[in-house]
Length: 552
Image (tube, rainbow, N blue to C red; front, side, top):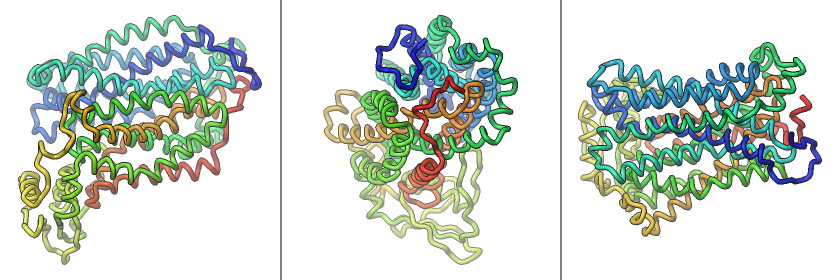
């Protein structure tokens, strides 16, 4: 076993340690790959599993299924965290990996709505629930397992390899989908090609299980098992006793909440912003994100290594603070580079909603299941979806809702989205298809455009923020909790932070945009959460890099 003393000198990584890191990381990459496919292929899933309902409702159901995967992650953390502290790290994350792989493969085989009717969407959402539960147990197991094999003074470096897996999993899913799209006709991809990434997961599952079966149990867990000191009720001990529950609360509010919003803003919301807000075509947006991830991923390892030298806390909190301070200028620059005509229209075209304030409700819809019927709400959400900037003006009580585009009225009815788009184009907004300068859906075409590299550079900065907050977080969480409840203790705050604070970031941001009429206003959500984490973390979060986790 590795020399775990705090003063241990640097030594090369042993073959056993390399095997632990590779096996744990590879399996976790495949789990993230499986999890992200549903979001990346939402339009295809909607067309196949929800074709019996109107397209808008179908897409909403797909997003509900995707959101369900995030919503249940903390419950997976409780279920599998308990098992990990009772029966061991190795066998628990073998179970979670198997569940994830099978659920993903089933999505690839699942017949469409035209074949089995309502069973198709039900089957899809059930598979997403299983994936979310499995992911809730996988991360804590992999991070704990690697940390408990790590030398005391290199734990940040060793666990940082696990931290690359979410980004690498997203990157792999984007590359597989792009490769298929670029080598198939759109008709073939829509008919059956979209299923290939799901079906491939069964091969990845077999490889991952074979590799992980070669591993031994964590030395820290095995030591407790041999000594008979395992916790008999890890959940009760972790969250029912204030001394441990307090640690979990601090870990969430002073660590993972801010880490999560910075992570999701830098990767997932950045992609959403490009495609949904700036109207960049999907292939180009995926290529831009993929290049930024490729350039930025090594920095997970760098900041994990650096956290062994200067501490976990300063890197994590600095990442949150710098991100919060620079989000507005970075996203503003991305907007001007990718769709200058849209930004110009925001300045020149005046769109006004006049409505009785009592008739304007809350447009927050985190899981995309609400039905909006009030004209004011329909207008605000419709304009936000079209990336049209508007001003909301109060009208007398009892009056109706009116929308004007450069003083031209647009009726708020079932055709509002189509009519307001036409009116905005007439007033100066860019047409669909002419919405962006970056219109080269090939790697060569995109990379020959200097503006593409500027956008990649800005996205790269966002990924650097991600690596700052995410690189050290696994080591910090592992070191916060005693060995006997470590799997349970670290998993719950991690998955509440990343499953809820982070996972629901895109719909939360969209709700803020819809409520304000400003495409950048949604950035206040990650900024406020990140700054809250900086304040709470500075006051309450301890530095943990020198803790001996075997001493607990």
